[in-house]
Image 1 (cartoon, rainbow, N blue to C red):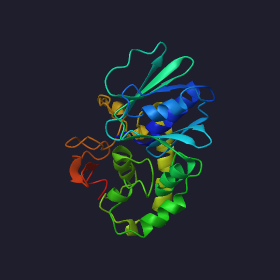
Image 2: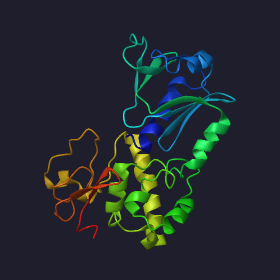
Image 3: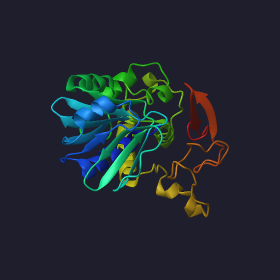
Length: 268
């Protein structure tokens, strides 16, 4: 599932390609056809993200809400757009580019009130200007749940996925099973600031890089990471491989139906 930085990159790109101009909106698949017909030819005022949710505002009370989920993707390119094929839920066509949405968990036309209700259920987003780490701390510090659970809870902090969870816990030397109540305030403040920096870097680069320069395996003559997620990381999807810092074998386990990765030495 795409993490928050991916949605913010999409929002920035769609704002640049389609924002403040009339946009053709269609639904070749048909599942979004009625809503697309209402929007077709209207001006896309704003594209923005909150966590893993994308919002395209077309009118005073017309907002397209997209949640990519596990399989959703946006394919983009220059005009002319190719002939629609497969399960194409929504197509946006601007002056020079098109964007095709396939396989999302949600693609729906909502009112401002409905969007507000969604956003009120979400936790603060480290990539938004209104990010409130104090609100996150309130939830975490009162919980007996493991940090591995809390960081992935989108009602606690929005936009953090499996990669950022694993890497943030490693960078701050925390056992993933540490309870929220056991976390001290100073450590959380450092984590929150670090998370903002890491995720903003993800927006800028389009990949997740979390390894500090002094730990970069390439400085030790090792090969760069090759993975569809891109970026150099400490533990994510490195089970059985040596830790970049101490050499201990990275471990993995299933936690709440997702794979969890950690170093048993650095995160003792």
